[in-house]
Amino acid sequence: MSDSPASIMLVDDHPLLRKGLKQLISLEDGLEVIAECSNGADALVKAEELDPDLIILDLNMQGMDGLETLKRMRDNGVTSRIVMLTVSDADEDVVTAITNGADGYLLKDMDPEMLLEQISRAIEGKMVLSEAITEVLATALRRPSAPTKSKLDGLTNREREILELIAKGMSNKVIARELDISDGTVKVHVKHLLKKLGLRSRVEAAVWMVNQDQ
Amino acid sequence: MSDSPASIMLVDDHPLLRKGLKQLISLEDGLEVIAECSNGADALVKAEELDPDLIILDLNMQGMDGLETLKRMRDNGVTSRIVMLTVSDADEDVVTAITNGADGYLLKDMDPEMLLEQISRAIEGKMVLSEAITEVLATALRRPSAPTKSKLDGLTNREREILELIAKGMSNKVIARELDISDGTVKVHVKHLLKKLGLRSRVEAAVWMVNQDQ
DNA sequence: CCAAAACTACCCCAAATGAGGTAGTTTGCG
DNA sequence: CGCAAACTACCTCATTTGGGGTAGTTTTGG
Image 1 (cartoon, protein in one colour):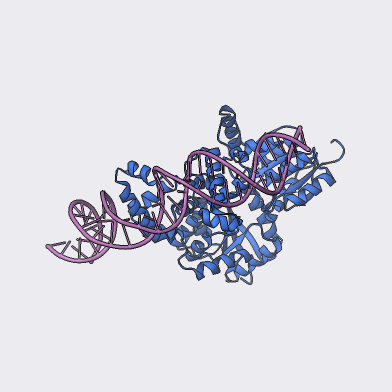
Image 2 (spheres, rainbow over the protein chains, first blue to last red):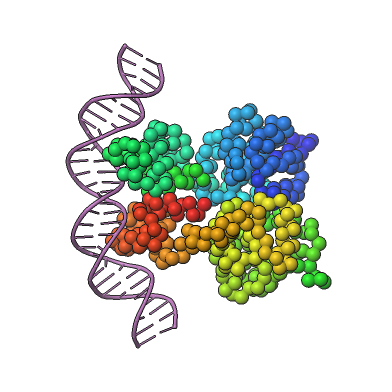
């Protein structure tokens, strides 16, 4: 790290943003962009091939999204530092990203100088988080019952199925006809899934669910 | 237009993207970025002050969003060419943007060379649309009764406000406390907005609304 | 094989919801 | 100014929702 510059790989499906980021990084001595990818699949291959010091990974991508890419990279044994870059400010995905092995979570609307600084810190091995993100993380840790995406795994097949129908706006009666069971039974499943998710009404469940699948 | 370069103003709350775009534009002779704004309010002032040949306006911004900014600019008599720039690919906002006086609608994940070309064409007075967008526009025109976001315009301020709270999963009672009105009154607004939107329950309303803002 | 979990269906009941209605005040517009 | 729309608040009433319970059948996993 003393002789050659740190190698960085950019993964983002917006060419413009890659351009801006690359130019920004080029201003800094000791940093070098050695590869750019516009999608997760390419990134997986290149990451193993090049083993860069740092991978800057967009969260919101077409096709395989950033979280999925992150997960697969770690599964494949990629040991590069990986920093997520995203637009959304108050994102629950931060928890998922960190638990899946991200070394940082930065926002695209950061001040460029601050961003450069954070990138350097990330390469030094530090965990870097945007201001707005630390709060989200803090509250998430404070309230471990936060309904993260993994909560879906706690549901039975029937409950998940019914949750999806709720997320389409259906009433218990309609769901009952759809699944060919009594509406009393639907109510039981709804009751259970609400309890498991820590939610207080089908409206909350619908909103939560719709937000889950982007 | 023959002697001096065309003046361009960038409006986007992502510094990185502005940087990338600016650098891209600087590569082209005859184009010059004369101003950058990170929000709609600034953009309104600068647009009147500088009267640029072209304004490139981000659709998704914090605070005043791109559509609102566009509308206000036209209301203020800004005659610059205005091209919307956005991330989302199949956006219903395109119809609103065009009817509100936008001269183009481009996507951030376009090929940079293509983007430059489109910018030049916009300055020449042509309407520029991304590939993916022309389809959306075509179907929208083919189906003029399409339930576009304009349905929201039929709602009163209070109704829109309450709809947004429903879309956060709130109950009538909670909404009442939030807005400091009686829950009976909230029920009236909910009743009205459901009727106007042609929906049958607050769950449908919540789902519809959440899907509206991506 | 047997226990645990899931799925089904019903019971009761309090609370929330949505569709009617009347009615007073405030706001905006011609 | 005067009217229409919006906002407010209340009324009734049928329906839906969600929490609690019991209980029978089927599936699953050790």
